[in-house]
Length: 199
Image: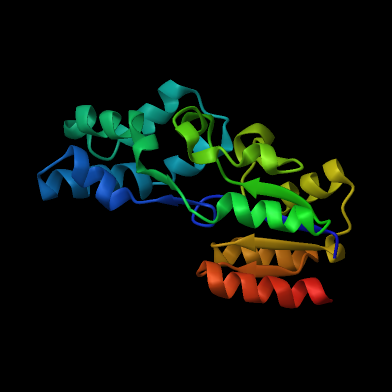
């Protein structure tokens, strides 16, 4: 094994949408409507894909609840406030690099959230490289994004380990030939990773 590939969201960075939405709205119905509009209609995937214009994205978010346009757009604009860097993130990356592994990222991530991440992505310079979906114009679990990562960094899939919290992304990586860890929590992911690195 030569390379460890990390997803970022829910692996190295947390999103606490419930706490975030409760921090800006007090009415439970409003929170439910805004959460549904932002996350349950496929528009967030297009945000991560990086193809739609900002106007298209905003129209897509508002379409399911036009009476809540102001609240939906406020929550969208302030969405970076939902991010929290996990305390082990930098140390995990650096420890693998210290052992001689190439460490890359492959993450569904948008320019919108990148611009609002603050220091929650401060560990990015530790990576040896990687691909954000918004720059590739495709999202996991599209097999093409795994191919793009391998082509870009001249990777042999069998010599990589991929870590992701999304089961479908993990399954696609495995089908592609990349041994993978389904991230549930840090401790179990570390154990599974170490077992794969022994191979």
